[in-house]
Length: 108
Image (cartoon, rainbow, N blue to C red; front, side, top):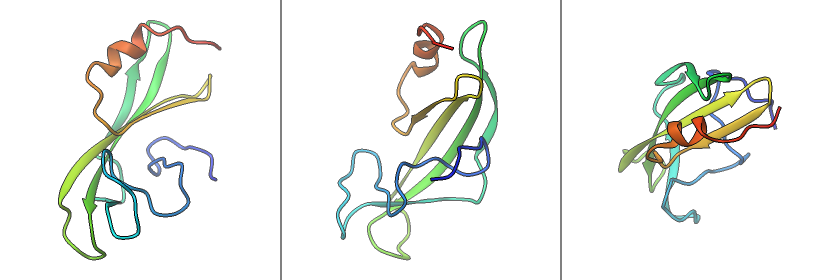
């Protein structure tokens, strides 16, 4: 696997087909594809008063057949803390996640 580089390419734990949030991954079901070659947005986001993360948002389309139009879209949000080398990937649009990260206890 490649080293994570913020804003360069979306993160996935798979080297093959990757499913869509909340949908089963089977040979004939939900697959995802990025909607562009670059991020929807990126920059920096405060995580705590002392830590700042590289923040990137990617947009994906989910489809059920090759070359079919997407049935729905979702956004994946990546927070990367380069000093700690911690990557948080949120593909479920978790409500309040920024506040949760801001009150977390961080090592490093």
